[in-house]
Image (cartoon, rainbow, N blue to C red):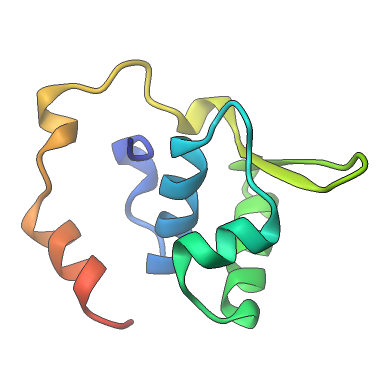
Length: 98
């Protein structure tokens, strides 16, 4: 599943992080899981997480293990057919390094 459309006009790494978190919205992900899912270097991931945290788009739960979850407003209610289709812009963003 992908983050809501209104959150897709962000920097590529931020969108990839939001998408990965939306896929695991209930359980959340650790930084290591996110790094593997997004496939970027740790500095780029750290910058994206910092920006997303400042914009209140992610929630960080610190317990025995730090888990990151998407804010509820980022998670779509139910996927629509329109959300399932990938736009040309999304396709290019996934394939071109920015």
